[in-house]
Length: 207
Image (cartoon, rainbow, N blue to C red; front, side, top):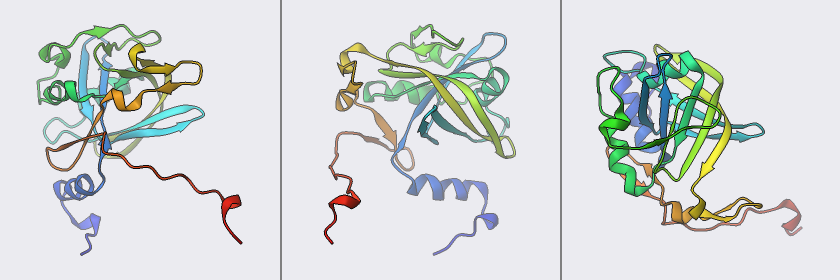
């Protein structure tokens, strides 16, 4: 079956994308407005986009009732945000910060989460998250009414010391991070069921 996307309603378009593009890593975004009010929300339209410079991308959809979401407003205002990653032990807290709270509510306080000051930017990072990226906006593209793709340049990476195997070689105990990702509907997936394929090289092919 084919869906022509210019002929379907927005909720159907969302369902088609979210039900098929999975698993999706979760960016637990901490931002701050010009007045210093902090906001946190999880985004699963997210991924890393490059390493020279290191960049991440956030797909920030419109809120059906309020238009531009708080996180997007803050990032557009200040150009700064932190992406924290979500281990399974914090999945419920991350889900709580997705609540449709009124503007001005600090979701981190609501979820009982401590924060640690960032080094280069104003928004703090979530203390218990094992990985956090301090980001400044590189590029913002408005892709639709109140909908944006924000490309952030990663200016600092924080990883909990207990997950560092070799700091000089940047060897990380990735399985121990115990990160989760979004699946379809309200489901999440764990990151432990893996398999390995070695990337082929042209030189290794037989004539």
